[in-house]
Image (cartoon, rainbow, N blue to C red; front, side):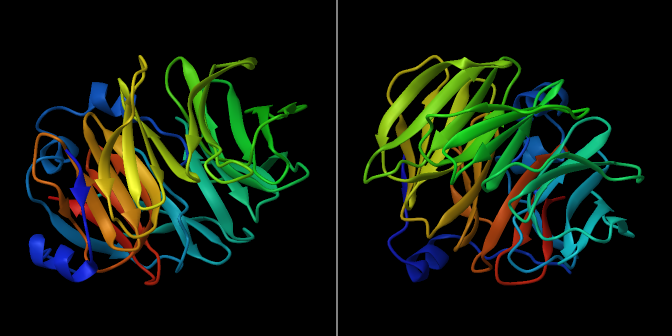
Length: 323
């Protein structure tokens, strides 16, 4: 099934209005599928109608967002990394002197981020001293984690970087073509090469910890921009479209067309959430596809068992789609 949206007017006519009552980074979708029960908010909102709520203000135009079982981590102001409870409540500033976040990722104990496209830092989730992990040449744009390492795309350098979480000497992996988005599952790291010429984008994969042995899953892509993983599937966006590819291989299935400027993706089982110019869309082959937050543009999206979280693109807000 492909959702086609010919115009924003038609889109808003097709999808019911949302009840507004007042989250490329680390993709733990496969973990979510294991630990979010069928009665969890995320599982139920992937097929049923839920409500949109504002959790608080966020920096306009920041796509940096990540979520765990307790908090959403995001950029509240130009210089502030903040966390807020997933159910709403008082926010807590973790770092007050960041220099504009580009991407945020989480593990059990730390928040990791790229700052001003030139450095990778981390700070304890509970608060504490900030650690600089690496300040590489070029422009880091996306990061993902495994148990021991941080994987980073260096877009303008046409390289990937891997650095130990505890810090140390980074390893560089050249011969990429403008890598722009990266994600990990239990066994592999996946990334998109945007390409250096028309229709030269690629979807790539390598075993965790072994980026010297690279597999090209798809080629001849038209400027792919965003990536998300589920247990058995890979989702990616290119242009105004989104696609699904089985991890076992095969042909990519177009599942969304005509969505204005998709910027970030997050996946749970067979459901894909797309943040972009027309708001937040839910694409599910077994349920009705709908716009969840029209016409409020969103830039970042992250999933937790308590719901779907998104940052505003042109509005200073952190949103939650849940119950």
